Structure formats: structure tokens, C-alpha cells
View 1 (cartoon, rainbow, N blue to C red):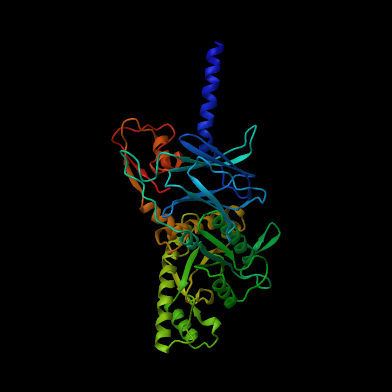
View 2 (cartoon, rainbow, N blue to C red; view 1 turned 45 degrees about the vertical axis):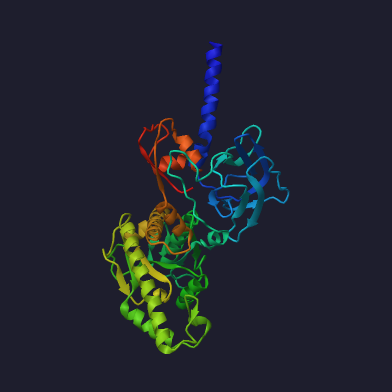
Amino acid sequence: MMEKRGISILLLRLIMILLAPIWVALSSPCVNSAEVRNIRIWPAPDHTRVVFDISAPVQYQLITLTNPPRIVLDLQASTLSTAVKNPVFTSSPIKALRSSQRPDDKLRLVMDLQKSTAAHVFTLPPNATYGHRLVLDLDHHTSVVDLENAVPYQPQDLSLDLLDSQRDIVIAIDAGHGGEDPGAVGPKIQGRQLHEKQVVLAMAKYLRAMLTTEPGFSPVLIREGDYYVKLRKRTSKARQLKADVFISLHADAFRTTEPRGASVWTLSQQGATSEMGRWLARNENDADLIGGVSLDDKEPNLAKTLLDLSMTSSQTTSQGLATMVLQQVGKVTRLHSKNVQQAGFAVLKSPDIASILVETGFISNPTEARLLSQNSHQKKIANAIFQAIKAYFYQHPIDNTYVASVVQAQLNQKVYRVVSGDTLSNIARRYGISLKRLQQVNTLSSKSTIKVGQNLTIPAS
């Protein structure tokens, strides 16, 4: 009886060890900064384990580079302790370890390799001996391009400079009105007058929080508090921040209480034409930069062509994004109009920034005003806009952005045919990807089994 109990305990411990990486992957994303406090090397005859002792859970990205072979680990919101010494890599595929602190608060760890090597990375929670850990396993005998009976994974021939160029998509979020300008005034709710400026600032902050947690997007608020920003200053600030998209949030009002529903607006053709004339007539050199190009020294017809191309591109993006926002917002609240509307709003007139205006509802309607005052409804509207932004740019990625690299990686996925003796964990290890990732891509659960001859999609690691 005691012998059976001992075996059961051993099995339970083994299961817990195997499930640890999956449990960590399913945990909530890390929001606090982490510090790499120590690096430990555990060489073995067939593999090398590199353990990074970290102060808190981290989000990470593993990138395999060739010519020369390297492994890059990008750790979100992380730093390297000054106490960490360069470890000795004897009897391992690693030649040297380099690190750099990037402006976007990422810690980049670069390992120069003796040869191209399959890699697997995962995190472990604290135990009785160690705290949080990030673990990198390197297989001594399996390269990323030398796998028997498999379609080999071909890593992209990337450079660190190219990786650094994969910037975030910058979203400028404009909460309308503010300060001495309350915007539309709604009824009193729980003894307090409801003002448009308060409602849209709350939504803007919710939207920023959602975009902040989404890799590849960098949200900025045009106003962060209860103060007024001039209309032209709003678009000017967005351009200074090099925003790709400008989203202005408002809450509508009417002279009667009946109208209700949300709507989405883009710049009208008449508004675009008048704005083009205004820009061509300007003389301020700094203000005449369109997409980083000055119009001041250009022949008039060329300047008009450049401006026309820029506005046509931004309007195309504006219309596509506005359509998707309208669809998503319509899932969580009533729509005032089922089509994207057009007008000459001043905040939509940046010639090189895709710009939309979202009227989130009628604050003059008592029923809708009560909804707009509720945090839960504000979050629903913000989430609808967030989902639309994410979906649009994954369908229409901007060149040299993180989102574009993810889309390209998805296009580079390989297909592997299962052979006798294969297991999901072994296949994941061969290709340097996590078991959970392999299961997700192929819609498999931890209880799923694979069969000889079955085709599996292998995502880029």
C-alpha cells in the first residue's frame, strides 16, 4: 500500500512539473517591471539549460537569427541587475551573451551561438528553492534546419537592426472638450451633472489601458486630465507623437431627448479639399512636414501631388477603420446610423494621419445618458473600439511594425506530417516552440492525441 502511495506521489509531482509551463502561460499578463537578478548555466551531454532568475513574471519573445547564428530574448518591462556577471558557457552551444536596454523598456538578451540550434523557452513559478525563472533549453544535437522526417523550420534571415525597426503602431486617443469646455451637458445622475468631457475621458483611459497590454500598439492620450486643448493643437500633438491613427471620442447631444445611438465619422471630401488648400498656402516650414517630407522646397505641382497622395492614403485607412469600429460598437450599443458618416470636423484634418471621430451615444437622451455614466458601459465601448483597431491592423498591417512581423510569421507557418513515435511535446521541442503554442495553432487540448499521417501546422517560433 505504501509502495503504491509512493508511486502516486511521484506521478503527481511529475505531472505538476510538466504542467508548470502551461499554467504560467495561462496566467494573467505581467504588468509590473521585472529584474534579471542572476543567470545560471546547466550544461548536459545533449542539451544546455540557461536559467534567468527574475524578480517577477515576464512576457517574452524568442527570436532565432542566422548569419551568424544567434538567439534573441526580448523581455517586456525588464532590466538587468548590475550584479549579474557574464556566465561561463563551457560545453554549451553559446559563445557569448550580450544585453541592451531598449527605449521601449524592453531588455534584449542576445546569445551568440557556435551553430544553429533548436531552442525552447518557458517560465517557471517560485518553488521552495528559487523564485520566478525564465528557462531557455538548447538542444546540442538538433539544429533548426536538420530534422529527420519533417518539413524543416526555416528561420527568417533577420538582423537586430530590422528587429528594432519593428515599431509599435501609435494610436492617438483624443477625449473631446475638457476644462472650461464641458461639451454636451446631460441630466443629473445621482445628484451630479453629467458632462461629455468626463464620459469621453474615462473611455479614452479605458481604451489606452487595453491597447497598452496589446503587443505592437502604443497608445497616447491627447489630454490626460480635465483641461482644454485647442482643436488644431490636438491634431498637431498627434503629428508630433508620430501617430498612425487619431481617434476622437465624443458624446452627442440634440435639442430634444429622443435621438440616441452611436455613430462614426470621417473627413468629408469637401473638408479634405479645403484642408489641402490650407496646407498648400502655408509658409511655416516645420508645420509643412507631410509624412516626414517638407513641402516648402517643392515645386507647387509636386507639393500638391505629395499632399494629395498622403491625404488619399490616410482617408482610405480612415474609412476602413471607421467601418470596422462601427461594426464593433454596434455589437454593444444602439447605432444612430448604420453607415459611416462624413463631415468637416477640424480634428479629422491631419493630412497624413488616419483620423476618425466616434460619437459614443446621445448624452441628451436620459436612457443613454445613464448608460454613458456607467463604468461597465464605458468599458464596453472602449473594448469595441480596441477590438476594431486590432482587427483592422492585423488585416492591413503597417510596414516595419511588430504587427506586420507577426502577420508575416503566420504566413511562414509550416506543415508537419506526424510519423510513428511522435508526440506533441517532442515535435514542439524540435521546432523550438512551446507545447501550448503548438496546441493553440492546431486547436488541440492537453488531452488531445495525434495520429500517424496527421498534418500539424508549425508556427514560426
